Amino acid sequence: MGILDAVTWTFSPQLFNLFGKEVRWYGLLFALGFYFGLLITTKMFKSEKVPDKWVDKLFIYIIVAAALGARLGHVFFYAWDYYSQHPWEIIKIWEGGLASHGGAIGIILAVWLYSKRVTKRSLNWTFDRIVISVALAGMLIRLGNLANHEIYGHPTDLPWGFRFITNWYQVRHGADPIFSAPSHPTQIYEALCYLLSFVVLYTIYWKTKLKHREGFLFGVFLIGIFLSRFLIEFVKENQEAFEEGMLLNMGQLLSIPFVLAGFLLIIRAFRREPVYYDTDEKPKKVKTETLLGNVKSTSVK
Image (cartoon, rainbow, N blue to C red; front, top):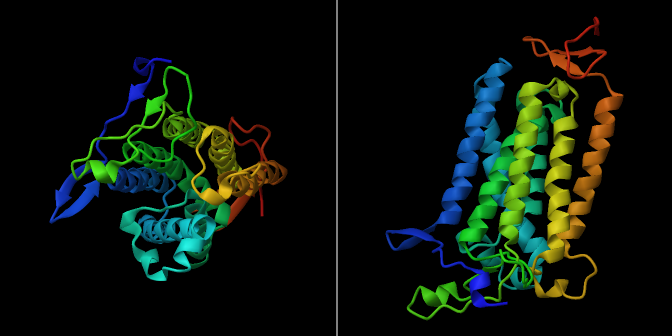
């Protein structure tokens, strides 16, 4: 394959310098994920006439849990050998090192606490609403990885292969760039899958009554995000040396429980009656004859 058959990716990860500190596109895209999530969740909560303070508290819980969980996920799942010897570096989150599975676990714990302390509603009610925003944020984070020239795939002879800069830190100080072989742009693959998941979830929420099947949207999210992650890992470079020789890498092993949980949540959602909430916060279960049409029966206390 000739060199012109690949995309030579020279995009700079650096957005600008602020008081001598590098601000990256990754950080901006990460922040935008939370910002758009706030807008989307606010719109949903207003449509359901829940207290305004619920949104503010939810995002405090999630921002802290996502950042902390993603960092600790990287530390314990991927680099414990290093950080066990350099524990003081765990707090250096600005130097990179976040794991999406750790972030997911952190968010799950945060939502459990949030549901007990704030909404008094089921865990699945909250999850069904926040996963729409999380899918969009996941897309933006993967675009941040693309900007960082990181987490890409195996070499490929496909015409959309990317040549990434492998020595960006040296390039910043005047060195000539060293490019990878044309490789799968797995950041784009994942970003597209997450965008599709967002569109599907957003449409289901606003255009159908399936959001009243508690856990259904959460289940669709888990399958859409983690099944795509599992499959894309087959063409992605391993992130750590210990993954070499493994039949399934760490990202795939961590994805399997989430995918299985997604199927279980969908099955459970259809085995239980839809749940509607009155303005007095008490759930009201309703038997329906159709999922997509109007409710056609009386409530069950």
